[in-house]
Amino acid sequence: MIRLKPLTKIVLLIVISLIFTADYSFSQTAESYVQSGRTKFESGDYQGSIQDMTKAIELDPKNAVSYSGRGFAKAVLEDYPGAIQDFSKSIELDPKNADYYFFRASAESSNGDNKAAIEDFSKAIKLSPKNPVLYFSRANDKATIGDNKGAIKDYDKAIELDPNNPLSYVGRGFARTEIGEKDAGCQDFSKAEGMGYPPAAEIKKEICK
Image (cartoon, rainbow, N blue to C red):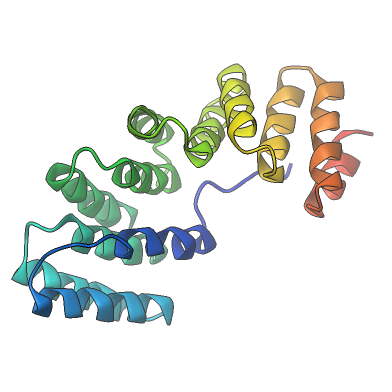
């Protein structure tokens, strides 16, 4: 059966920009390594990105953004334990930043630790309760461990906050079919298909026979 993947390189490439948009005040030399690390990351040189972020950390070990930048590169290389360690350091340095909990949760999810991911997504939601991506992501992990009713509640909230994301309907459709609500699930697949998400048609064909 087709399933949504909790973390992809595409998602990483999107969210990496978040950690470079804020105005961080630290030494120009460390900043230059961070910017170089970002450039290398975006060009696919993940090892080079890690090296530059490490240099930035050596120069300024108390700036959370450098650890997150290195964490992203490690995650793309599937070094999830290393990524989790770096995101944990970001959280230690900036514990009120919801993004860092989201980043660590995504790495934990990719590493197969769905329960830890759910806990971190929940922490992120407390800090940023209007972010639909957090509910969507937590729903995916709840569905993975078989908590389909909990997943449906989170997909509902994600849809409430962002009704234009077809993936939320697809995820809810899977969860609904898992608890025996096939008709409602198929309606969700149809909704996603009508929103221009082509895979929904194949999913509906497979499940809604």
